[in-house]
Length: 149
Image (tube, rainbow, N blue to C red; front, side):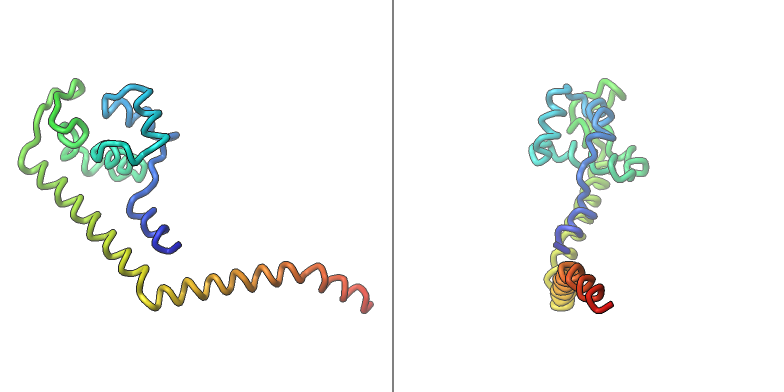
């Protein structure tokens, strides 16, 4: 569970309801393609998925100059800006970003497997069980208190 939470932070779920139309326009795809991506985000091209995550989290602003024209269109002609291919600095920026994401994922996976985190997860599960038992016993406790009056 903790690993999944860390994964959601590092790789957020794309909020198609909020950014879908903008993503569709930026990637230059049809509504049908966007609908397919919404049903199965794993089938999205890596560039579109990265763009969707950046739009969802709000981190696109700083990376936009490095992303646009290369990651979005993967070297194809862009009718929006007229750019065709990436400069070496753009390639380096994307490779750096991808390396940071892979590093963060590896760190999250390692953290999720440490004994302290596993013990904390077990403790949280035990506390959840205790809470459920207490809630289940509450009506009987009330009945006993009323009977004692």
